[in-house]
Image (tube, rainbow, N blue to C red; front, side, top):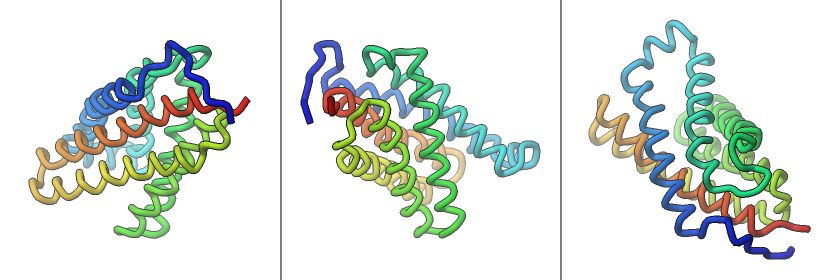
Length: 191
């Protein structure tokens, strides 16, 4: 593996801060639709339709934030051609695992499956093949911290405010992880 450091790739610290803060706002917007419109969405869109709508929101809003962290050929709007499939793969891995295993086990397996699938898309796109274990582990840790800490705070606060807090915390940690992953994927290419 050759380690390159393109001069225009944001630093790790910048990637983590922009990813964390920006994706926290994105997640807050998505979780607001859960807090205020979940029942309506389930009735009018079905459960599958609601999950698809939330996935699309994460892709559209998240891509705008995270696209600023990439250089070269993946710069916006082309970044959506990478991030869209990556987040969709994450969502499929998460949702399928959750509905197969249910409960807490489903959440943990979903976090692992989703993180692995998303990392795989990034690794292939950036040709950082030897970084799969590192990137998927990083995503799994960040995703799990955000999800489970957010969930615990949601249980503690409860109601719409709890759901909004969950969204902000989930987005903060997953976004920070995504920022770091995008940084590493760009500088750890296998040529």
